[in-house]
Image (cartoon, rainbow, N blue to C red; front, top):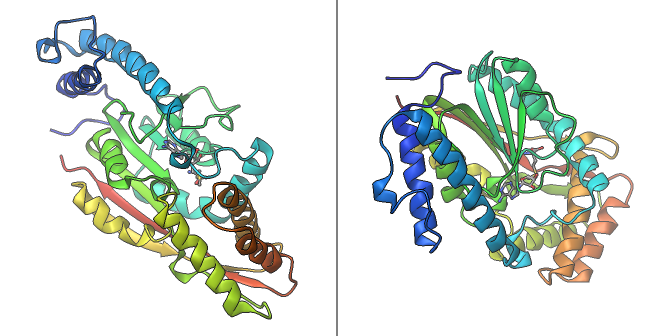
Length: 333
Ligand SMILES: C[S@@+](CC[C@H](N)C(=O)[O-])C[C@H]1O[C@@H](n2cnc3c(N)ncnc32)[C@H](O)[C@@H]1O
């Protein structure tokens, strides 16, 4: 039977989630002190299981945070070390370009008052703010990101959560989950998607939106062919280094189907841009920031980065930009 928006997750969902977190802790050699083993967990009311779930999640979070500190730099989001002001500007341009389409798709999926929503990889929270207003005080929004420094000044019904979707679960029972430009940055996007889908209630909906560099073209430069070769090399190098898959967007519809969702729609949003327009300026900031990090990490050489700088300092240039593939899905009831 499906659950009404705003209801608490069902008792069996909470108990299942408690078992999963407890089993992960046991596997990691950090068994919970609340009981003998995961198999001895309570199966009674959601109330006591819910308290236990919260305690276990905190413990698992601490363990994973320690483990993450040991992770190598190349496993992290490529722009995670960019200063906050520059990243805020870049995400502002991204929002200017893509928020209207995202909002239209969220409305199409039925987001309404009282819904429990989660955005994974919430960035600077432009969509979180829209969701918080849409669901109103009776609803709530979890704004989850590995880096929460830009998630400030948000409404009271928003819960900001530091979360690494590569290895941290969300509690079950959400009416809506949203991610944009997240899965393409992860080494195992299918696993992250499965984790997000697991957090949906039966009948809950997902909007996933990911980039695809397939149409990327840098035009209006006297040496456009060399420019486009260099950019192709950058996208391929990032893919090989498993830093970012620039061709993930096109696979989203099949990924949603493989994750067990019923596909509601899939569409592609592409645009071109001239200097001063959001599309162009977002590309400029993204490529200049990313290539600086990639040179430092030894993924591309300095000459390739200079090619990027040259393009964006040449007047009369025009970009056919990164496309956004959007797919909406519903979890079967
Ligand atoms: C390209 S930004 C997109 C931000 C936002 N979704 C938007 O479209 O404006 C990618 C976001 O995903 C976050 N992120 C990257 N890896 C993550 C992970 N493993 N778990 C959670 N968030 C992650 C980054 O910190 C960043 O905020």
